[in-house]
Image (cartoon, rainbow, N blue to C red):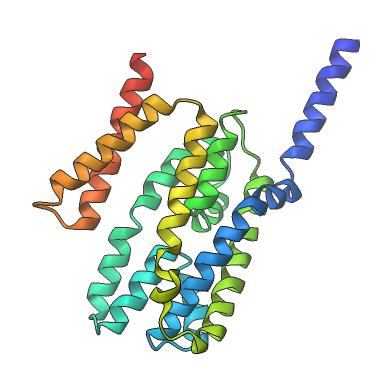
Amino acid sequence: MVQENIQLHKQDVNIREDSFLQGVKDCIPTLLGYLSIGFAAGVVGNTSGLSIIEITLMSLLIYAGSAQFIVSGMIASHGSPASIILTVFIVNLRHLLLSAALSPYFSRLAPVKTLLIGSLLTDETFGVAINKTADKDYISEKWMHGLNITAYLNWIVATLAGAFLGQWITNPEKFGLDFALPAMFIGLLVIQFVSRGKIAKDLVVAISAVVIVLGTSFFLSGSIAIIVATVIAATLGMVVEKWK
């Protein structure tokens, strides 16, 4: 009886940890990154000639930092709508990989619910979620919504602030704002390396990805080369993990 009570207590704790509020709390460490990158995206959008409403709508509808930087840059260089749409599509193809990696944890949900989760999935929320799977083999739907919605609202506020204050920042490169997005990715990568405790294997995958990108860049576009390197390096990592 005592053992059953202990087990029930552990289940209660897990339920509390997987609540919507816990998802909000788990998103807090990434908020500073969202604020800095979102602010930079708003400033860059402003210097590209976009209005505050256009920048806000882009955050609401596209909700992808890399895509928004690309759109702003291509608009500034007078890129055609077709080329902008195609470039954004290719760059964000990685979300197929991110969604596929998390899909087994939500396979019990209806397609509409998984669509809601996938539509707000970002590189950062994926990083937080995949780290959670290292401790448990279950991710709560409420926890995921808390994580995603907090990140989404924070991103909109950050880009809106950047769009408003960007009118006084005419040269974002001078302040390093154009490096905000790569800096965020590097930070997430280091955190995952440390938390996984498999630095040697992760370095093999990372170095393989760099070599593949450099090699395929001679005959493929930069975006396609990144996608090819991601697929091959991830497959290599899985083989190494199974082979050990």
